[in-house]
Length: 136
Image (cartoon, rainbow, N blue to C red; front, side):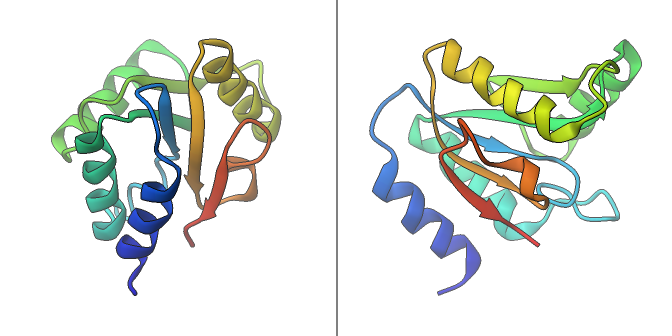
C-alpha cells in the first residue's frame, strides 16, 4: 500500500461528520524543498476536500500581510484551494510547538473535530491534533 492509499484508509476510518477537519503543514508537507506539490499529499488533500471534511492549514510561516498574500497565492497556484482555515504564526510566538497547539485548540474551540494532523515535524500534531501523521 502506498502512502496515499494508507492516508485514505486512515481518513476513511475516522471521518464521520461535517465538523471533521484535517490539518496540514505547508513546507515539506504539502510542498517539497523546491516549493512544488508533493504528489501523494496533494492527492490526499484533494481527497479530503472532496469528502466534505474541512481543511485547516497551520504553518510556521510568519503572519504579516505580504507573507499571507504570498502564501495564499502560492497555495492557490499549486492547486491547494478551498481550505477553511489558514493559520500563520504571529511573530510573538517563538515556540512553534506552543503556537501549533494553540491553533489546533482554536479549531476545537470553534466546534471542529480535528481527526488528523499531517506534518514533517513532531509539533505538527499532538494535543487537539487527532491522529498524527509524520510525513518525512
